[in-house]
Image (cartoon, rainbow over all chains, first blue to last red; front, side, top):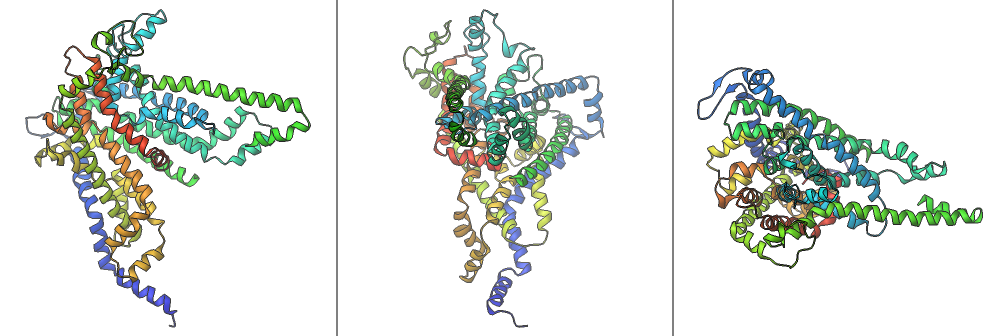
Length: 311
Length: 296
């Protein structure tokens, strides 16, 4: 037992500071602030939602246990069923914006991935919408979509010799209007992530391709696209998660209308809970949303891991 | 890079080709600028329209065809917007809430990150998984119960109700933990020899060394909270407790002749603070977003 004196001092020091019981106690003291918040505002509410989803709880009446009745009503009930499925379809429709956004962002990121003077200015231009609050942007776009002839979009239509539209007040156009604004709003974030991905692709690969005489499109198809695929999937999943949770623009611009064509699941949940006060049904919707989001988040975590490994 | 070296090699063999290549390159750059200019002007257009409208008088706002540049730079809409709703109060509320959430998140995240990065304790793996699991439970799912809790605590229309549910952030813990783990053990041993306690070691050595990640996390916490909408919408009823976003919502839904010039002035006022912050910290913001993959 002839340990090096230096090693001995380090070890004894370590045992002084890292006495097992004391260290565990201290560690939990460090975790405590976060833990309290998580227990009160995340875990307890999540369990509470699952429990109340099995109750009929229409305020101001008391809660009554009804088993899976709420889910049955949502999936196949004569009154709630059609409303729920309409909300599911609206949610899917709204999430169509995600692949559109992704394609445009990808093209713009390719354009912006150059070291020419002024490129920073262009990047800023694309990024401004992303940092602006959805509430402020909704007000601006309500003005752009104004149904009178002096609304900007209608002015453009008139200049092209086309009839003016009612935009957000037209059941056929309301959702495309929200999607277009969403693409404009979310593009900047996607571009930043795509640019980071593009800059991680080793330059040597392109140089090798140049020596082989590969053209621009071939390089895009065989180098950029495959190496960027983890980033692309990541953006896709994040985009779908965000579109499932979208609330602000719907509340500001359409309040779920006209004819509830823009009532997505997230907005339906809000209406059922805070306008109709049917807390049991709202909890069932919340649990359904939770399961979908959980699956997507798990996929996203796998992708983040892959992205980190790749870097 | 590669095409540059290519064209440097070419002149001896194909001088004309090199020339045409250089020409192509220059033409390509011009085209590139033109395309990007067109696209970015289109993207900026709504902002331009917002600002232009905010300076127009009511008759000019509703005239057809609309004018691109306001006839005169008059601030009447701003004055009217400022006086027709308590925007000063909304600003204060948003600032208090966003700053408190940012500070609270940074403290709670640093403490938890330190425990996960630098300490060994019983149940560490379980605790880590528990923290991780919170990122899978989105706010929509916890909305109703959280509201009922805040109501029970009598926190409706209070700053606590707006702040406390958000002062923990598992994603922040992971990001900060990753940065804390890169700090060499030797520093900790040296600090220990000097009789430095954990909290002091964290505050005086680890935190100053992790400034970039803390700045990025703080910025996201601030922006995210400043722009948040759903929670402040449901936990505030009284006008004097509304944040800027909710104030804007009720301001616009008043429907008193829809004075769009005033609405746009209000939108500009809501937008400016975030854009100013963005330009101040642009670099760390974009880098932080790209590396952490976090959305504000």
